[in-house]
Amino acid sequence: MMAGIHEADLHAYADGQLAGARRAAVEAYLAQHPDAAAQVAAWRRQAEALHRALDPVLNEPVPLAALPPGLHGDQGHTRARDGRRDGARPWPRWTMAVAATCASVALLAVGGTLGWLAHDRLGGSTLVLAPGERFAREALATHAVYAPEMRHPVEVAATEEAHLVAWLSRRLGTTLQVPDLRAQGFHLIGGRLGVAEGGPSAILMYEADDGTRLSLQLRRMAQGTPDTGFRVERMTGKGARRRAPGRDPMMAFYWIDRDLGFALAGPLERARLLTLAQVVYQQYQGG
Image (cartoon, rainbow, N blue to C red; front, side, top):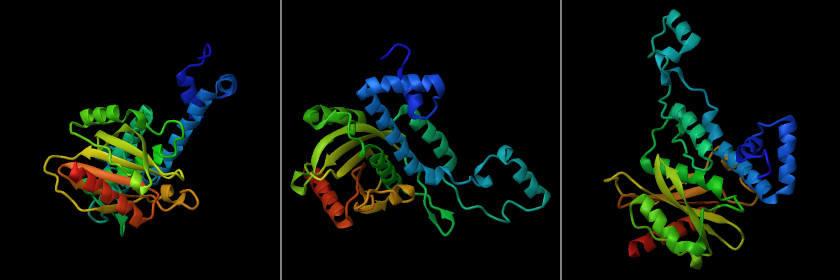
């Protein structure tokens, strides 16, 4: 890199944290280095995708019931003075909103691994999601981050499929295979290592001739996790509202089979995505 310009400067520029002479110096550097400029643009797209995926949750207020008593502040004192018992006006059950805030900061720091908060609401209540649902939401968030990438959607390209399979199998501690979806119009472009519920996951990315991308995410579930049939999870919130014109809503079909979780995500019509999920399932059964 140019003397005095380091990767940390590029990250700060991508995050809008530079001003004045330092910002001008980085812009001059990027004007002379197209590869670095493309990388900065990719970081910005990833940050935007993370915001679309996580802002609907992180922007919600945290109920007092979710905080330790010492953090209740003035609201807690006011409630005590008014003589209202904690049970008088029950808060909805809260699962992981506070943890999600910390987790999202950590995930942004490592630049590319993220978790999807297990969060849904019905009638003002927060649901505690089953492991498969949490995994599906993480798969949707991961797809929203990596699928738009033009230069770096994967870590290992399909030309190194044998290495990709061996690497991901070793990291997950189980034998994986790459489903062949060419007959359904999708070819493998590669894969990467991800994070799901605090553990490693394998991400395989597929692409159709029209540029539509699918991602298949796999992870080891806890031993003894019950097998499931095919279930669907849809992208909600800002991520769903900002989908590309003409694209179907983002959704994922997920299932658990022999302690291995599968989630196939993409912007496809439900029946077509289900057909692809069935092909993946059948190939794993045959393998």
